[in-house]
Amino acid sequence: MKLSDLLIYDKITIQGHDNPDADALASAYGLYLFFKDKGKEVRLVYGGRNRIQKSNLLLMLDLFKIPAEYINDLNTHFEGLLITADCQEGESNVTKFGYDELAIIDHHQPAPTCLANPGMAEIHSDLGSCSTLVWDLLNDEGYDVNANVRLATALYYGLMTDTGNFVEMKHPMDRDMLDYLIIDKSAVTRMVNSNISLDELEIAGVALIKYIYNAAHRYAIVHSKPCDPNILGLIADFLLQVDAIDICVVFNDTPDGYKFSTRSCIKEVNAGELIASLAEGIGNGGGHKDKAGGFISKEKLEEQHEGADIDAYIGGAMNNYFLTHEVIYAKDYDIDVSKYKRYVKKPIVVGVVDPEEFWEKGTKITVRSLEGDMNTVIDGETYIMIGVVGEVYPIKKARLDKSYEYVDVPYECDVQYSPTIINRESGEVKELKPYIKACRSKETTYILARELDKTVKIFTTWDDQNYMLGKVHDYVAAREEDIKDIYVIVNDIFHKTYEEVK
Ligand SMILES: [Mn+2]
Image 1 (tube, rainbow, N blue to C red):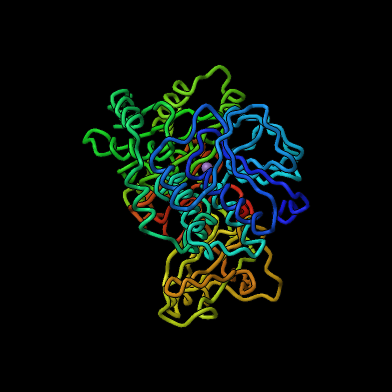
Image 2 (image 1 turned 60 degrees about the vertical axis):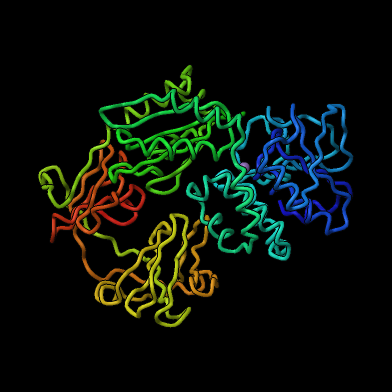
């Protein structure tokens, strides 16, 4: 669905969820301004038991002139189109009003109760905020949010509060928006300094004394009462400063599930990987190695772990996480060769880009892909390689020339987010795709590998600070010439790239 598809309606109402947070207000406001600009009769509304009371949100409404109306008459009927923003009509945190037509713009999990027909919904649950989604939809319409500093700052604040001050962002588009926005910093500072209400101070205080502690693995779990998502991050940051706590998992109830913040200060546990693992198959999670966030859907938890309440599930999943993860430090580890088979690399086609085609030597660049950001400098030596599943990594020119040859076939790779290259000095962004050349390995590479029957974390000989995660059915591999060079190859890449030597 595009926003311009909705221009057939003359009367448009945008509804945020009850008890709206900064992201609901910002994303609804972006939509409000767009349709207002197109000459539509627009309203921005929310329902629920209470009017907005939190001081940062009242300040936000005032600073950015957001015309949010509180509607408590349940018989209200909105003529024309109703758009629910940062929420889905049909869910319990969305007051039911009347409407003629319905559209949905949201970044939560698609709810089974969602009433919109698919052609009238944009739901992207991998985005950090609904503000990001609205920014993207506005971009597609050629609507520049930076032309209005109030809107740009509101969207920034929406992403900021939904991702624990940006540390829990997990999609490259969130970063794209953050790089793009030109904001009023003093407005953000004012809102940040009226962030916690007295009620929330109490919620955080109660949460902190009700922790569950595991002494063997030095982690704490906290199930907080419902509060703003950014309060979870504050609780988690505080817990991590305790000397006996290395890892913490903090969560609370939302209408459709549970929102999480995780923290870790030890290299053996990556906070982003931990929450992704806890939420696997029943939600999503990601972020950084020290701070991350995620979500578990109530519906899916019930479906896949029948009868489990969230506390029992998290307790069990944390226990399991530490029991089933083996840590390997490659430099002190000898593989048991008898358990490994010999494989040879297939002559597969990968993509390569010379960054000097974009900017001159010495330019600091970021290559952004679905997997995250890779920072490097254009030095005439380092090229960018794009692997079989769209993964991006640097390769030295000497190694490229020695091991690969260019081939005259079109480079094809189907990925959900097309990798971009960003000039960190000028901010200019370009898509990598048109510049990718196909090349093929010309060496015969042999490895020893075995399929994993349990999860491993490998600290390789070239990076002893960050582990590579190998899950069940992935492969642990060692180069035949140097069997200390141990690493993980994920299952689908392994089967596309290697074949057994019989
Ligand atoms: Mn949101």
